[in-house]
Image (cartoon, rainbow, N blue to C red; front, side, top):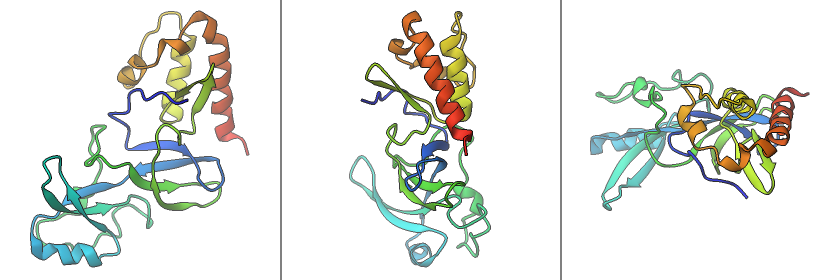
Length: 199
């Protein structure tokens, strides 16, 4: 059973289990930019660098969007060329805030282990690589850094929260933070951290 805690905001990149080989892989969310002029739609529909989609907002209004899948075709913005006037490759850059430009769980998975590189629909937290089970409930983290912070937090008596991951740590269910759980949860987190670097 997975717990749906602190899903929003999520980092732009998370570590997942590779869908091909099961080792640690990076998932990076795609970014979408609204196509402002009808005359520009054809460019994005034909472009190899983008995926065109017709989106619908919460009020039922439709709008044209150009999705860019980071890392899918080599270095990030090198593949974006000859854009129509009014657009810049940086329009598809990730925000400095941990927020996506859309609500879809789509992006690119890249695995150094087997060479997998393709579009992927994220199922979170089921896809999370840094995930353990304790008494029938799943505890997960976004990546190696957040797992290390989580491990320190679980082991700590003071429960001092790392400022970067404060929101994440605030939502950790108390099930994993009891004195009784500490030893087993710590051991399992250490094991999953070691599994990422194992050959």
